[in-house]
Image 1 (spheres, rainbow, N blue to C red):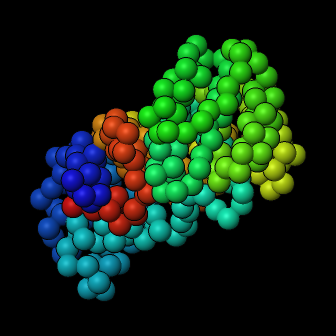
Image 2: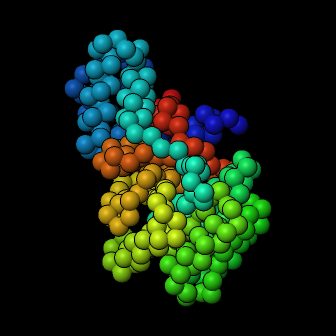
Length: 299
């Protein structure tokens, strides 16, 4: 299945929720006030959010009036794609050696699994990669990462449960530098964005990265669970205050009826999405494609 079909398949529940409300409207070339009300309700149910809903409908309406789009479906797709494309980011090793990335987020969003999948792809692409198990609190977190490291054919640095995560990061980056690694992916513990002490710990890990490898971390990937919809927005706000988030990864896109929240999160935070998780398999992630995502929502 190609990328477009995988994204479309993953967003089936979100798309069906929208179509159930306004499916007949999407083929129209104009919309009246009553149509707009129905469209607003459908987008809000898909967690697009009130501000983004207004912006999306206004943009789509302008495209219809100008003749730039043949119908409402195409106008909404174009409007969504344009907004998502305003800022872009690639999650891939840069020229730094080693290139260091932190994976951050709350508990249960799939950071460890994603770290393993990313490492596998990097290794396959010719970038020797090291995984660092900086989640020293969750039971069996390091073991889980070691399983993924085995699948990916990469090394992993870990410490005893309960060790200082910043010390693990220090040791991992030092090892990566001495071994000539191209990339280091640091799997951090899930933490509630409301826990100040844990967010301070995350800041400390970021500082340690910079002391060992000047300029690191080169990328901070905030992993969000797409099934949470707009509830993920507050998470993203708080993590962005603690560390310089570079881009977003959206996991569980294959099971959400609230995929419209991606538009609201990107719009409010001004952060690009770089990674889309669309399944449970080892290769079930792809670089985010704004146009594909927009077509998956409405097409």
